[in-house]
Image 1 (cartoon, rainbow, N blue to C red):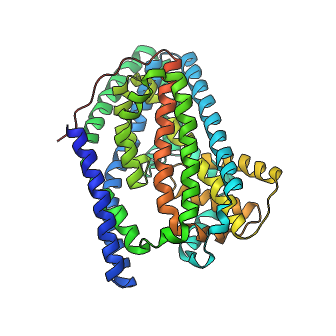
Image 2: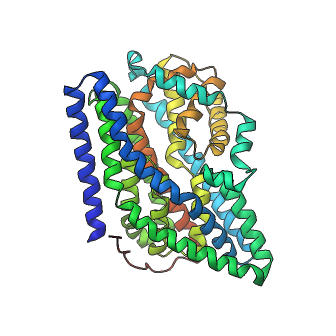
Image 3: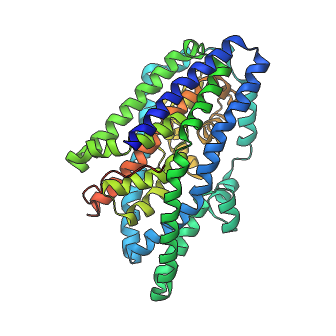
Length: 419
């Protein structure tokens, strides 16, 4: 009952945020609306900061414990290989679907050139100029684990945790005390998750009130077709993921979707898939996934398997080209797809990561990078759908690998919400 109550509160917060934001947009001037948006967005920042304080230690503790519980390097390699197979296949499928939808629907032709957010685009271009092979390496390999933990560099934490977990397993009995301590720490952090999730409705309200106060409801009139085509692509991607999930999980698929409904809703309304990482860990274990599989696969998925973001990258890049009347043949589009497949892996944890990659890709393929300004006004709403899809993809990957490993048990039952 408490679980359902939190979901209701989140839905109420979404509706209230839209109403309050619309009233401010209609009655306040541009300066006042901007001040309101900056202030009300602090509510979302508080919620996300609370979640971010949990993610780094949770990833480290759970991944080390997960590797240690797998028992040996052969098991780590086997499970990691199955996860990698799923990640690569899902990423390529998402990118291809984005390319297919944009070629069939031509959403770029519906973009209003006069509605470009040039200030926001300049900010993204500034971040893109720093994007290179050197920055890719810096995002993957840590020079200090403490710096990586402080900055929430998830990929760096994952790399260190894998080395630490493998070494802990290799030393045998001497490492068991460390594993027990980290396992206890992980359970304490997961208890904190329940407390933090109580702030979710407040964060949802702030996020939607801020964006509607600035953009108003008119943003849907200018970008309605663009959003509609993107949502159609997301719906098709969901159909593919759920169909494949059903083939593997069979009659437990409905139970799986019910279990992750609340994390999906939070990710959708806050536009942050990272915000539900701790909660998703709990729900997958409640669904029946063994903790050692969840602890190993889920952190990797958040770094390498962002299906919604992958689809959006091809969709947005090609839509911008269409808006400028730039024709791209099939060979060039497939080359862009491979580039996106590779470059997207090095920016986990970067704010507005999808747009940073889109901007860099446009520049690489002679598409005006400032064209990203054309899609910024509607990006918040696109981000809602791609964040929710990222959560679905990672939850499904973890459950499928658990089934492949014979480690999917009957559901542990509903988890009580923290009060």
